[in-house]
Image 1 (spheres, rainbow, N blue to C red):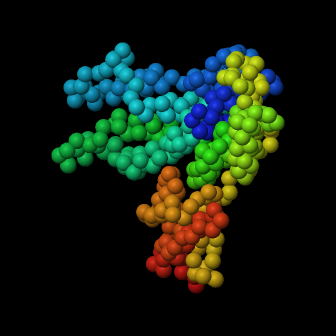
Image 2: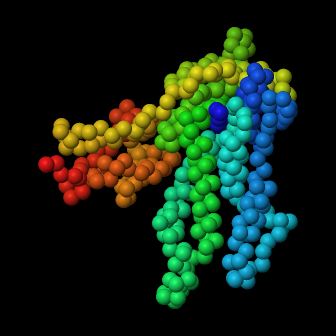
Image 3: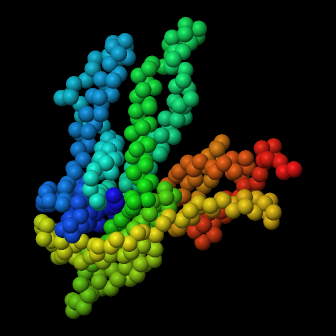
Amino acid sequence: MRIILVTGLGGAGRTTVAAATALAEARAGRRVLLVSEDAEGLPDDGGLRVLRPEPAADFRREFLALQARSGVALDLLGAAPFEDAELTELPGSRPFALLRALREAADGDHELAVVDLPPLPEALAALALPEQLRRYLSRLLPPERQAARALRPMLAQLAGVPMPAQWLYETTARWEAELAAVQAVVEDPATTVRLVLEPGPAATRALRTARLGLALHRLPLDAVVANRLLPAGSEDPWLAGLTAEQHRHLAELRTAGAALHELPHLGRAPRGADDLALLAPARTDAAPAPVPEWTVEDRREEDGVLVWHLPLPGAVKEELSLVRRGDELLLTAGPFRRNLPLPGALRRCTVTGAGLVDGDLRVRFTPDPGLWPRTP
């Protein structure tokens, strides 16, 4: 099953394009699921089904489930449990509801799922959450330490202090499994991103930011949608000027390295399924361009180094930062940050330099004599 994640600038028409894409694919005979909080006026039958995430209800359900699993520990602490009626949604619950909906979409029997994501920065942050939270869990509660739970009563007597409760390990294992499942959906080759922009100065900047963020998180961009294009050939000087400006920026969007879909401005807000049919991007079954691989180049014979190539289109040298921490490389690129596990060979090396050449970040590693295998 293919999953299309639709994001873009706020107000550029992401939800409209997502709904139009899903409707067009359903009318073409495919079984389609649209995941959107805001899509209106769509039939929820036939080949198209609409799943509407409900962050508030999702938060209450998950909180009460966690409270029930932690009942023994809460009783020992004398805590009074919450009831459904007194719970209110906390900030930050919306991305988690969206990610659960994404996993549900992947588990369905649909041929295509179209997911209406928040604006670009929030969308990339949400898609990065599973990997980030799994890293936090593994640092705070390493899996190897869970083996001590069988010895917990004895260790508590010897140490004279209480050990972590069984429910903590079980809850951590459950979270880890759920996060791993969502991360697998995000990283699946059949999951792609579609970027919706309205041609203009902000769109050009957003495209650069999107390409950088998607490359850092290794998400393929399958298409750029230029939305609300004004009609050419107007005799009105004001409208002709706006149209000319749009087309100047449209030329820049063609450099994205992905398919470009041009959608017209209807002169009004879309009204129902018939208008959405006019705004559906052209159907294509062509696979998106693969995400460039992160490769390690062996230059020990020439320069005595290994070079890790990290393609980052749109990166700017002044906005890059690298920090080595143990077996990870902490990479900051513009507004994005990611902790990259080092390939096995590079863990036995020290970082000796880095350079950015035509969007290719090249990090140089020198083998550590104390760790590198000796050749006979």
